Picture 1 (cartoon, rainbow, N blue to C red):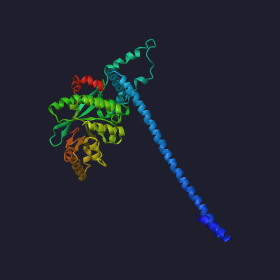
Picture 2: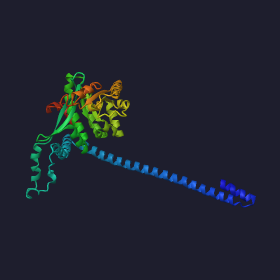
Picture 3: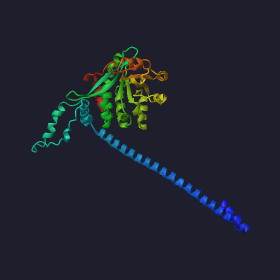
Picture 4: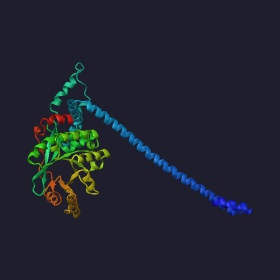
Length: 387
């Protein structure tokens, strides 16, 4: 506008002033530069929005593919008989066999043995093509088995057992054992953690039903995972198992780690809300109190906070921050648990802030007899259908 004004003034005055002409040209050039800059900024913003939309579209495509795969799996499971579903569970166990054996050997400091299916030796005689499947049967004569163990959760003020933690160990034919934590890590890496979570639940429910006959207030902490909570089909199987024995299920406390809780998808959060609506209690383990939103945890049904006993005392005694946190948590009706207590010092320190505790200092996990974890009729057939 300033350049136009200069031009009109020059035309009306009839005289040519070089300084005004130069000024008008300068203003015109500056205006054009400003217009180009604005247009460039708009184009850059459009490019960023297009990149974001492209990422969203790719994410939606991945979600669609995941849903399609899950629908195919649901249709396959629906078509299977209970016997086929049991075979499916055994097949998942066999998938973990090699990795579990390698883990057990590494724990003993041995080099992992080569897998049977990739040995470079030639096959047996060509005239016996059916001999190989039969030769694998002696290996199945001493298969891996899953065993239920119960670890006492004691009342720190009295030292009496108040609750139990349900653990699942794998033992092979040679008696080599893989503990619960390592087994669940391997199952998660293999993508079959939900099957192990469900199997642990179905073993724990009959035992808890028997325990609550004498101790109605007893609870059993059963681990679950983000893989299970994020899957609607796996959660349907969990809910079906809970509905079989609702009285015992009221004593189940599903335990999820703080790290897995933070990584839950919206479907996983909805699964926790579904469990809360069904009256199921949750526990959060490996807790980091930094930025912990206790109000939101209560909405998701969390009532127990499992904190490692080593975290209470960093070498300078119990801090005031822990005392204040414990008071605040108790005011919001949370129960604190000191986990992995290994000596008397940790137990004494933990007793000042936590109500319960577990670990090697109190008692080692106790193996449960196989018949004690088997559901009685009419529960047995219902568990088979739920699985």
